[in-house]
Amino acid sequence: MEQENKIPSFLLEELHKQYDEKNYNKIIMGYQSKRVVSLRVNTLKSNLEEVCNILSENKIEYEKVLWNNTALIIKNVAEYEIKKLKLYEDGYIYLQSLSSMLPPVIMQPKENTDILDMTAAPGGKTTQIAAITNNRANITACEKDAIRIEKLKYNILKQGATSVSVLQTDSRKLSDYFAFDQILLDAPCSGSGTIRLSEPQSYQSFSEKLVQNLVQTQLILLRKALRILKPGKEMIYSTCSILSKENEEIINKVLNETNAKIIPITIKELDESNTLPTKIPGTLCIAPSSIYDGFFIAKIQKQK
Image (cartoon, rainbow, N blue to C red):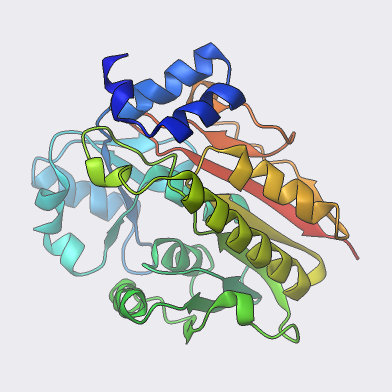
């Protein structure tokens, strides 16, 4: 494939090592494709029927998503056209990739619980959790970066997510005296699943050193998450990477140190053609494509 030359050689080597030829080619094809525009209906302010009616009035075509009844794929307009709509301005919808919507759906957050989002900005998953729980959970959203935290606060306000408390801190430094019923760790990662060959900024900074540094951060964050997760409760570990170095290898290392186990993920409505094989049964890896970003998700339970 001609465009393979654009992809950093270290990433190509890792993909060749990890995947068979069929899945390797699937990933490269995904990198070459243009991704669809997708959005999530914000049920704190609106509902699917109202949003669909407004889109139809504006001659915007859409397709519903089988595994998420608040997600829509936009068929005939670009993202900037959606941003012109009052619907967007008023926070009735949130522009979000379908893969990014998966962790909160798999998490199944519950009302009247204490939930932590460890790396929350810009707030797509945080506000999705608030919507799923009808603003009836105590959600703590952490973000260490001063600029990114302003974007997080803006989105929380715009989406009407009144159940969220923002904490400007590095989650690695959270006190071990905290205790949460559910935790989302959408860990900082290399973005190997989000590469688009038409967008050089999506792969230009990719390097072996970047991955090595991120692996250390991911390990510390996952260890912290399991320390402050209540016994018997569940957490989600996710990345927008398709490299086992950042996913299965992290999880296996931490599971070997702690009293925790994998809870198998099942999404019947998700077509298997959109997935990649994983090295831990019950975890989920989404292949990059025109519809999805490459994404990895694991559900982990801390034992009592």
